[in-house]
Image (cartoon, rainbow, N blue to C red; front, side, top):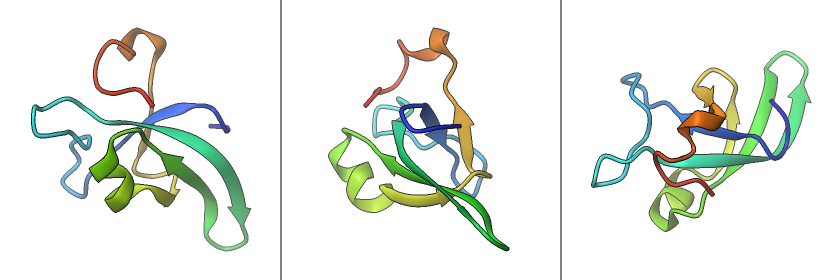
Length: 78
């Protein structure tokens, strides 16, 4: 994954983060930082204001799912 790519963010329960209407919330990778001993971290941003306040920021690769181009009609693409 690289800057500009769009991803879904999985919750601890394994489902993708969604808004109150059940639409998955898309995040855009804005920066990538490989760190020794902790793997690669990704800086995420989204247009969804509440999700940005709570979940915008640095995340490891594990909870991220790349968004396939055919999924762009679902959720909110930032």
